[in-house]
Length: 329
Image 1 (cartoon, rainbow, N blue to C red):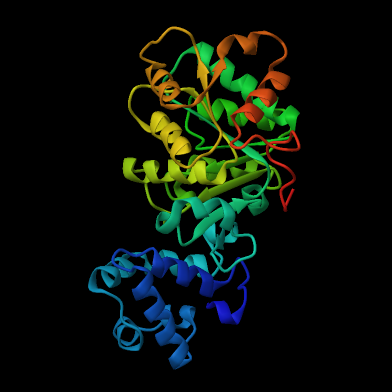
Image 2 (cartoon, rainbow, N blue to C red):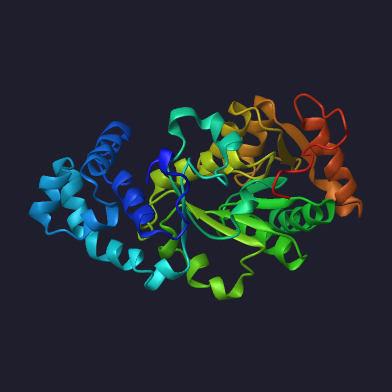
C-alpha cells in the first residue's frame, strides 16, 4: 500500500481500499497519508481494516466524519470490488507508484492531477502516440463527416485517438478509428462501472481500447466532473484537434485548456461562423492553428493532417515526427 512496499498487483483488494479512501470527501493527501501511516504502524492491511466492525474500524484508523459517513454508504460495494465480484472482475486501479502511471502527461496538471485512475482494457494506451479529437454532441452532418475522416486518417498515420466518448464528434472519431483497426483511449466523465462503454465492453477489444476514469466507479455523470475530465483528456494527449465547438461548453474549454497546456492545438476552420462553430472561431483567434475543412474533401487528408500536426508542434519536431516512439508503443 505504500511506495516502500513496491507495486501492488493492479487487482489487489488493498489497492481498492486505498483508492476508495482517497476518493472520499474530506480526505485530502494529508489525511490519506495519515490513515495509511496509522495502518502501517498497527500492522493492519487496508482490506482487513475495511472488514472490521464500524466502531473498531474508527478506533483503529479514524477518518473525517464526512468521509466515514460516505464510506458507510459505499462499504458493501467496495467489499464486492475487493472480492473481485461484479465490476471488480474486470477493472484495474492505477496509482502514482505504478510504472504504468502517465507521469509525464499528468505533470502539466500540477496539484490538480488525479491521485488514482480506474480503468478497463490496455493501460499502455496512456503512453502511445495519440491525438485528442473533441467536439460538440449536437453538431452538423459535415462536422461528423470531418470527425470520421480524422479518426481514420490518424490510424493511417499510426496514431491513437483519445477522447471522451460522448455522442457526436467524440464518438464518431473514436468509432471510425476502431473500425479502421486503430486504438482508442476513452476518458469518462462518470464512474467507469456506470458508463455505457463499460456496460458494452464485450464489443471492445481490450488490447485496442482503454476506458479510464478518475472517479468512484459507480458515480453518475456531473457537469463539474466532465470539465475536470476534459483537462485530463488534454493532459494525456500529444496534440488536440477541435472539430466543432459552440461559443460555450466543454469543447471550447477543452481547446482553451490545450492552448494553456501548450499542446499542439488544431481547430477545423469551417469557413462561415454558425452556432455550431462559433467556438472554433474564438479558439483560432486565441492562437490555435487552422485546419481547413476543405482538405478533408481532397482525398489527401492523412498527408495534410500530418503536415498540420507537425506545423502546430511547439517547437517543431527535429525529426519530422511529432510524437516519436512512445515507451509502451
